[in-house]
Length: 152
Image 1: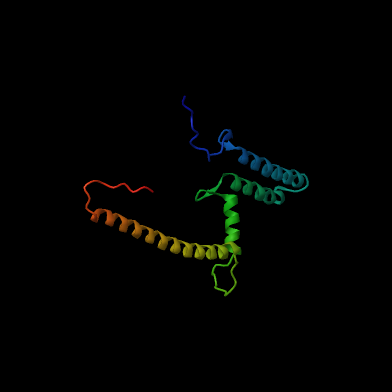
Image 2 (image 1 turned 90 degrees about the vertical axis):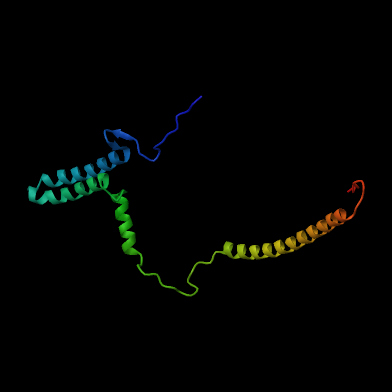
């Protein structure tokens, strides 16, 4: 029996037309804030007063919903830019300023001990091989008419 394997699992599902659920929620919240500002200010003021406070959240909502910069959503891009501005551009070396990870220290000790054990084991294996080679050499050098079986 054949099963269909999903291919594009990282692509979000379209809910309404070309809009995903995240885009619909963003548009709903941003549109609600924009409409709330409009209703509050349009009642008492002229268009010159309420237009700019209404346009700012409306345009920001559209940017966050639809704009991607180099494949990165606008909201994430803004946070990355803030992080870039906040963190230092030049890294300086401070003696002893790094984090100590105990697991790394213990791993090095264990690795050194294991290396010493491996050297001992290797020496023992080499001695065993030489002993076996000596036995094989004795058997080949001995001339016999019939083969001799060595019980273990």
